[in-house]
Length: 229
Ligand SMILES: C[S@@+](CC[C@H](N)C(=O)[O-])C[C@H]1O[C@@H](n2cnc3c(N)ncnc32)[C@H](O)[C@@H]1O
Image 1 (tube, helix red, strand yellow):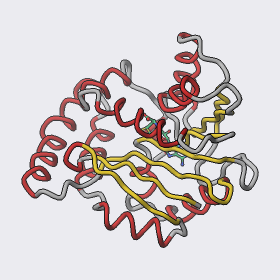
Image 2: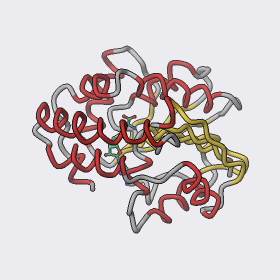
Image 3: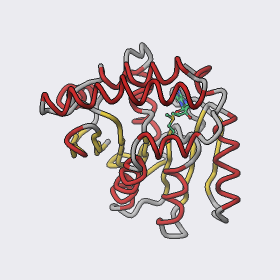
Image 4: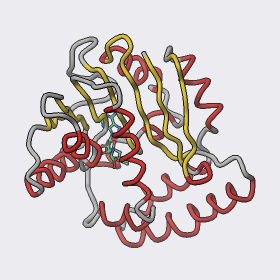
């Protein structure tokens, strides 16, 4: 899995915007609003990648809110830091580290967000339980866990169209434009086979989260998750 993120295709961000018709950004905005809702002192963007959620949090949070970002791909982190410098956004603590073994004290964060990496960490991942345990460890009691991720639409027709779009557009176009055929095949396959919202709700409750809530986005192709420790 880590190998898959060791190189970042040129124009990676642009490609994501095109393949999602910019919905990725709209949904990060929603996740940001949710995370800022209960006036957090410290926030983490977990699996930050090229830093989009972290930068959005930094821009929208009050100055006294501390924003941290973690990823286990140095190339992704380099792009995130360059992007922050280019946009003149300072004050995000970008760090290298594994989501299953985070370099933060127990109860350090009031809120933790993850965008489009939740599937990677939970889909057929034998270490998924470690991932959830770590999230709970670094969150304070009452802290918020917010995730935005692809999901399964309830409507069978929308679901079929969504799977077809993944298979016949996202996988070949992404593979062709980046040369990373396997990575985009994995994206299409795992997204089409991923949990339904109700299945994921059970997983989150079993992992020990409370007040597990979800909002389906664009007919259910994605979901915004909100849980409390
Ligand atoms: C699809 S990208 C999503 C990036 C970003 N969150 C966004 O909104 O675009 C997935 C990111 O998760 C990171 N990642 C996956 N597993 C990880 C782990 N166990 N620990 C830290 N980072 C991880 C990858 O390196 C990659 O940067």
